[in-house]
Length: 208
Length: 155
Ligand SMILES: [Cu+2]
Image 1 (cartoon, rainbow over the protein chains, first blue to last red):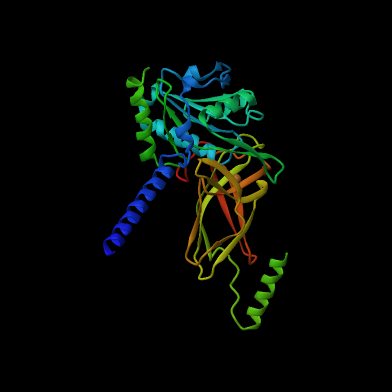
Image 2: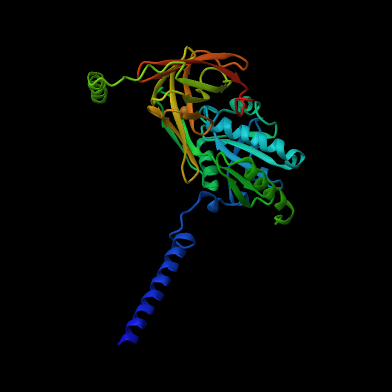
């Protein structure tokens, strides 16, 4: 009688542990796992879009293959997040020095209505010279964002204008086009710079 | 409106009860440090200004708004970034600063959003920005305008 009770208890414990393990798996790796944007970002080689850079050149994902890439979304009417990200990136590039010379750095607008080629040219001119500004028709911007698994949405403001909510992370790709990692908005420099180095280092091994 | 009346009634009750009414928040109670802003491109884009606001008094102070000749719609905004990495901005509403505490207006968080600029923000210039408090007190600070790519007050 007593032995059966212990056995029953043991079975319950085993069952509970198994359930905990299962729930843990479900939430962390299984179908219940949250889907961080970056894990789904596709390789640049799998993307398909046509944009124009701030010098008027037609560009697409293939323009980024062969060199590591740092890319992010924003808009030039953005008063806080975008200039901050652009200044952060300028600072990271300064820290990397020569290492960053062989890198694509691309600022892609999510507000093509206001961000024309000329507007982008003027705006990026205020930041690190490596930063390129890309714009294009709305449906092409949508395709870029889709490949990156980035989002943006137009929001009216009280001043009668509109602002854009958008993914503020910086995306890093290896020279092969493979997605490496993301730098979250406002991530401290001591974390950001090593992440960029990781993307730079995959340049040799990642060439497929 | 209701809340306003309620507050007024409460203040009146407190006064009748012989309790001291907090003094107006003035330059002696609120210290603004490290104010800075970025230059603008033209006048169509909103600007943003940053600073630290410290309450040196022994009463809480409540920041309710801003005025400046530079912009027709200055407002305290807050940028938030969600778990998916999406950033958005919205009015921060009233901000209570506890006695001895300070709040930081800094990139990616609270900022003085300067909507409907009346003139371009030119690097090297300064502009006056007045902080309005709920008790009628106000503090005016002269905000330096730094370069577009400035990262902080020292740039
Ligand atoms: Cu704002």
